[in-house]
Figure (cartoon, one colour):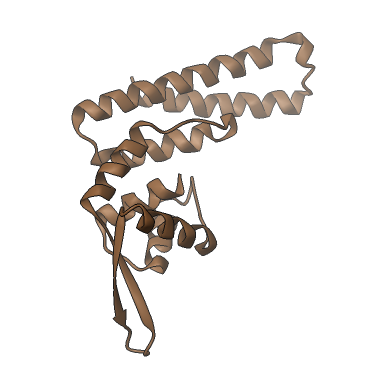
Length: 164
């Protein structure tokens, strides 16, 4: 997901690694907050894939600074990464769906429809799993555990409403 966030930010602004991290923090603070130790290797991977390129400049303080920008291939890569995102961890579905919705503005209308259908399907599956977990008497959840699941279920239902 961090590569999607980086490429999305660079699709809007040319930025240094520090600015990329700050913009991700500002725009996606409720869903993701990657450290420089996460952003830097991801930028290097993206550079190796020719998704981003940089220009080196000397700052006023005499330090060498790299300003990154997305390449045309990087834009295609970003769109493909959004459309083919794999939901591997159920515990991250809510934040991943939220992020993908927030970055979907770079997609064409037909691509958005495809993405929204996929996201809705993942949310409906998550909702069903949560409802089954709560109603299954063999799960033996404590009341507090059930309350937490119900609260998360409310969040899932809220995101489902976005699509209706």
